[in-house]
Length: 321
Image (cartoon, rainbow, N blue to C red):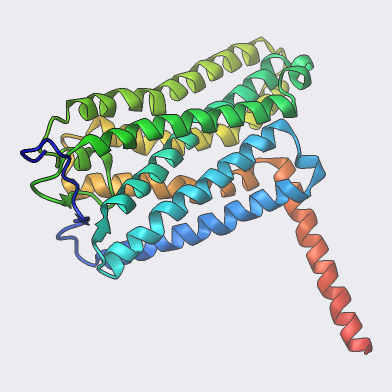
């Protein structure tokens, strides 16, 4: 704060990003390719769920929400990263920086909560198969999705809102590839202890509580499967969970690795790890669901068959005319 106790906010921040990495433009190109893949793939998944009546089930409401969150989060992050580093536009205004951080954190929290939702769906489907449609109705799933959005928005507002109490009177260079919360609050020249506490407490709710719920759910699922007499029945039940297990691994493993070795990792290695943790899951999630989930695979085949039939009909019409 200045001598009058007024909060000093800078006109802009400078995002330093990567330093000393040879041919780093190829990495930006890689991020761009992943972004385009994620937008196209998740849009296809959302379209299939919207237009195929057989996919209008509670499980696929959660899958649709995950696809929507993936598109929203990647669209908030990657285009700005490309603009910042590829086109050397490293200046970002104070308000845009906080908005940028808001959508990044919202996406991070919603992905985590959505994976917990999907594990809840699989738990009820396997542990209570005869009561599944009573416990997990469309109305219930819509309510759970809405609750997740409310929780995510409130938590993100707290995280970003506490940054507005900070005064920046020294450096404005953010040592990350985006408006990262940790490097941002450390630039403050007034008391940032509340931000430090929030940075330690909120990840427990954003990451570890949903992860613990997922692990407990699959412990219960494993116990239930162990009671199923036939190996074929166990394998069939496990296949219904395989896509979700892979999604959880893709999302959490890079984050767990980064946070476990955070203090030991070189700066560029940490930035690359965080960027991949943000960009890879949205690009891989739809592929996993298409390859691992029979209903979406069947729906996609039907759409492709209809498109092929329409193309043949159009060619025949043109040739006859």
